[in-house]
Amino acid sequence: MLSEKDATIISHLRNNARKKITAIAAQTKIPVTTIYDKVRVHERKYVKKHTTLLDFPKLGYLTMAHVAVSVPREQREVVQKFLEEKPNVNSLFRTNMGHDFLAECVFKNPAELQHMVDHLEGFYRANSVKVFSIIEELKKEEFLTKPEHLEAM
Image (tube, rainbow, N blue to C red; front, side, top):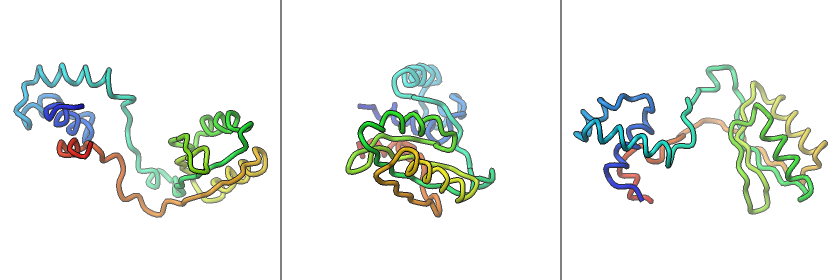
């Protein structure tokens, strides 16, 4: 469980991972050395990856979707490898409740998305492929961006 001080530091970094430690110290009144030490510990313990969140539509990738896929048991490993290697798959999750995978996908146009769906259904004989087109992103990567989120844990 995170302490209130840890949650405060993490919330600052979740909002802006490039924020200077001195700025966090000035805003929180936590000493710079304490923040520095805690950030190093947190990076080893909790941080999977530092990344940049992109605005895909501004880059010309106008089709975003979550794709739920169910495949025969003997196809799971090969379909997982296909989805992991597909550059348009931004995030991939193993799921349950009737589907094996949930892929967050980004494409330039709907035809590219449909090509991937056709490939899953035709080549891999997917039992089910459900496409949930993203019309508008309302919230992303918000959990633990405020210290009070710790109370939700």
